[in-house]
Length: 77
Image (cartoon, rainbow, N blue to C red; front, side, top):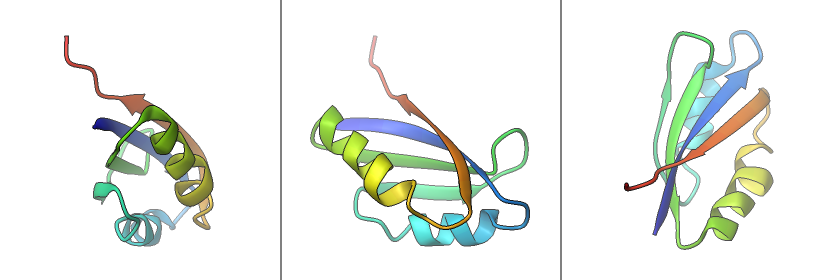
């Protein structure tokens, strides 16, 4: 299982709506609107890195109101 934090920038005033929509996507563990340089932080999981990438590109980035994403895979050192 691969997990990642996805840091999301949104259009002004869209963070809450974006977090709510993303929280319903399969594989998303948690989606929270936050303050700071990013507007929403998502924790997601998938079986493989490729599947995680497809989730981000095809499903998360397709949500209306998102302007930029940064995916940070979780590593266990």
